[in-house]
Amino acid sequence: MSTTAEVRTVTIGRQPVRVAIRRGQNEPGQPPRVPLLLINGIGAHLELLEPFVRELDPAIEVIRFDPPGIGGSPSPARPYWFGGLCKLIASLLTELGYGQVDVLGISWGGGVAQHFAGFQGSRCRRLVLVATATGTVMLPARPSVLRHMVTPRRYLDREHLQRIAGQIYGGLARIDTEETAAAMHDDNRGGSLSRGYVYQLAASAGWTSVPFLRLLRQPVLILAGDDDPIIPLANAKLMKRLIPDSRLHVYHGGHLALVTEAADLAPVVDAFLAAPLTASRRVQAGPARSPRGGLRSSRPRIRDRRDGPSTRRHRPRRARHPAAGGGPGRRPGCARRPWSRSARSAVRARPGREGGRVPGAAPGRTVRPGSGGGTRRTWPGRGRTTGAARWTARRPWPTDPAGPRPCAAPAAIAGRRARGRPRRPRAGLRAGRRRGGP
Image (cartoon, rainbow, N blue to C red; front, side, top):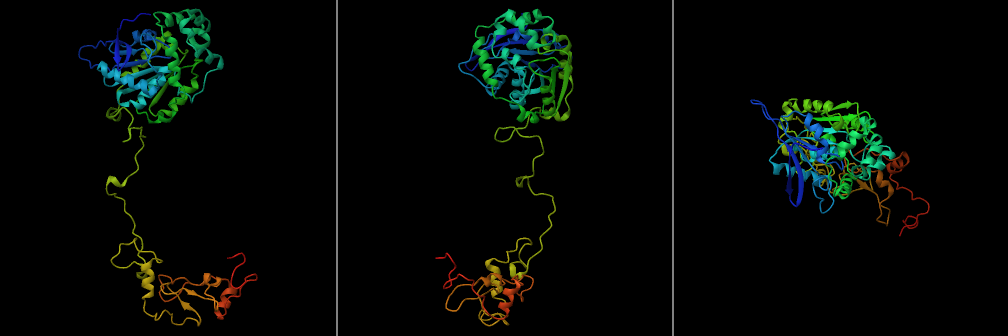
């Protein structure tokens, strides 16, 4: 099928790309429409979408191209990924003099369109996804359909396409296979199709758009058929739930309805592209980007200290006892802990303690200097601390400088300590050593 658009070859870097541009015919006094970029399916040349282009509003300027290795574009030197192809498309638009465009992708081209809208968001105003899915994470087709999609034989053998068109494309292809075969084989340039087809398969291997679909800020129109054997309808419903600003239009047809039923779908796409944008959408159509270059969520960012002083009122903490490091001259909530070195010095210098002894202490108990009133007991002739010292008071309460912390020892140990007798060693201890000790 021939095209009436302007066809030429543009070289981007070292890669020649075949491009077709249909100039927009604006009416006098009307503002120009945003150009529309079409990304075709796997193995398809730009002439395949000619019926759809003819049904669009003549005021819309339409841009089509052949991916590397397909149609009139030579095969690249090495395989590519979706990221590299999107950079090539962005450079192509810059070379042609276009800034922001609307993007429509069908089937395999729908995956490229999702990637372009996600990572080249400033160049994409609105997005139209036709008969496409989210990549690897999707509801796949039946194995009997997938085995025909692995090879480009349907583009090279017309009789083979007529036999399988209804099985893999559905819709009107089940009734009239001759029209589908004519649309896919007229002016088909399949010189290097086999190599380019393999590169297209490799570019989509392992790719999925599920992680960044929620970050898309462009308005999105999803077109899906109820009789599409390649892309089941459940995939379109999944994208509708993942994309925030999206709408789903289900038509009665198959995978190639954009070509065979262009008169019915072109007005739907035209009405979506002509609808006015809201004020928030005019500010920034693409997704926000973090300082490192990746995508950033549109949710409100958590307040950071670099944002300046906060207006939130904080309740100050209660000041501690002067012996614990609080008191005048220190900001509330920043008092030192009661077991800090300054706190022990304050307790040791408190009036009522002379020579390291606490008035009223039991005979035989010594006060460890700087311990805040803690006691220790040693066995005669051995400088070893008994287990009863674990239950003695370590330091007084900060709010009661004169009194020690209550003893938490069991009743038996507390009674022996009150009578002034040391704790009896357990059986098995020899010469003050525990069993198994050094």
